[in-house]
Length: 80
Image (tube, rainbow, N blue to C red):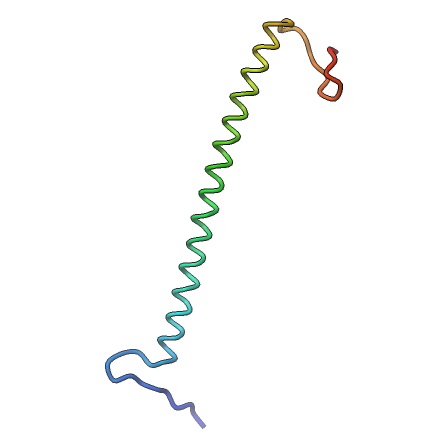
């Protein structure tokens, strides 16, 4: 026995419209997640760039104060 389809006289059947709507919602949600991920990535890269800039500045200050030939043990802060 075949299913009886509810056919709209001027449009899609109910089943076709529901499937189209569900797929469209899924597409929109996935697209939004991709946009959110891209924005998060950009903000993370921007934060990394800022930290790198601050680190480089601080390293230059320390090199000026203690000399460029010094190496620092990052666990103790002592010169090696």
